[in-house]
Image 1 (cartoon, rainbow, N blue to C red):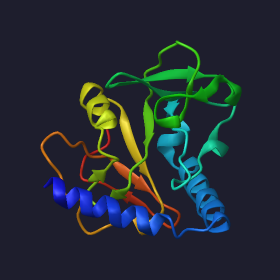
Image 2 (cartoon, rainbow, N blue to C red):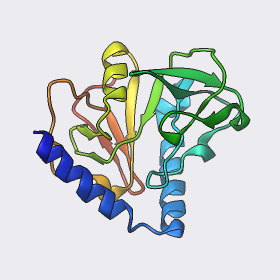
Image 3 (cartoon, rainbow, N blue to C red):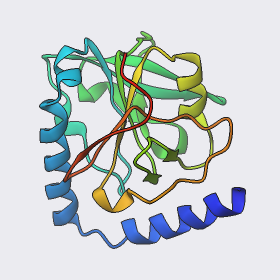
Image 4 (tube, rainbow, N blue to C red):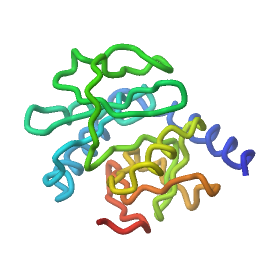
Length: 183
């Protein structure tokens, strides 16, 4: 199973590396528009965002004063979400990703989850460290929405028992309802 995941990670990184800056901006804007029109976005009180890598959809435009936002912070092998009031409260942290500088933990109603690949059932291939899988296991009440470019949707993501699905996936061209029902 690990070799299947490694091969898919390599394939996805190669495909993502081919996306130009302008195409990434346009696709990211489409994702943001699609996300903010969803009922779950409109009713969520606290939303967990993530600081995008260069090969991920840029979702910082979603940050506003209308919602309460929390960003992931890594401590050892644990992921936690910390409330952030403005973008200046983020600084480089683990894996050179922007992380909150504060300490006020938050429990998001909805978290946006990055990944290298997703499938139509909510299967997700992350980067291999398991941070989101562990967090989702500990917080089953939170709705998890995968956020990716349409090219990251594959027929089937290889999964193992510890892998957690997302309830929905938002791409630049569609919204996919995974197999895990909404609460």
